[in-house]
Image (tube, rainbow over all chains, first blue to last red; front, side):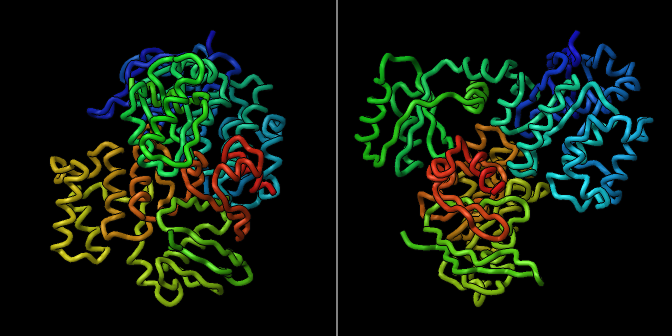
Length: 305
Length: 240
């Protein structure tokens, strides 16, 4: 039995359809990523799963419990970390944790082993008010509070937003550490590069899931030769490449532009053609190399198709 | 290419705390320069000095040819600012936003009218001119916000996390606008937490504890720190 089941779920806000008849399942112990930009419907989906919002159509199940009828039971087995910091800013670190443990009829001691590796990092600041913590520490405290009742399912809405790459990596390491307790995790992020840290991901845009697979499965599905190209004038480079025969798409990608070719040609003919085209158009410092498609390349392809 | 921003041992102390510790660097005209650092590294303080909002404790900085210490008002007139989080007033129309920011930047009404016409034409937003900004799709809002930041023909535009949270396609379209501005000689100073944005800059500086500890192209930094991407570079530098 899947731990999280979403079936034909729809949600409207007035005219706006935040979720459009979407279905997926998450298995026990998985770290499942919802990858998509602001406005994709990630938070709406989380709120429905957390029994805080009623869907207009379809239904959800957590560990077999119905999202509407059994909401009280679901809340006992669910940990939810909203995207916005939602702890009590005027309570200390320790008071927040005690409070959330007490609300669930538990205590810090009872489930300490679960949070020990995380809490030990913020324990030196246990008498500091939550509002005075840095972004990374707030995030760790919020995770402890979401875990203190030993949930079976953890919903994490954009935990990486607003924290620097060091704290973000530490956070993902903590999530990996929680797998030993059999906790199933649903994590959302707008950062495509975090997809590879999940077992499976759903790529979301405008209330729809465009693809569900392992990160490797998604990139293996790209299906077109891809090159990374740079030259001294990137603005002109991109404009020119879009007009070249055989190029399906071209867009900025970090220091390079990614060039997606229409079809596969044997050998390095594509590279030779690209080089001579750019030389003919007067580009300088040309650098062309084969690129492995990333989740971001795939996301762009899905949006455009 | 000439130097557009130049700092020499620029320093800011608050009591016993040194927020910015003798930073020296140059930014060239038409460059896309990433200004990075962890929370509390001193980035915001440094930027406040460069935008004429905070007086340095010691050291020097010139921005667009003006001394930030002696001529902060001249500096402010030559810079623009845009952030993903806040840029336009959602409850004003497209036209009203242009007029408001034109007025804030001290443009005269005839010039504002002229700029409004040309900007609406360039962005193909004429049919939307009298619609509320909140009704526009995100990609259009971004284009408008960036154009508004360029309204007074600034030499430098400061961009704060310009594309965080947007979809990859909209992000591309936005970077192309930035490339276009740079192509025309505008200098872009980008601050961000997101290393996927940092990858697009020509050069990057990294601040740790008030100092600039690394400054180079993204490619050279990745080589130097033997990292696959800027995220890894950031972690290696910030963790020491």
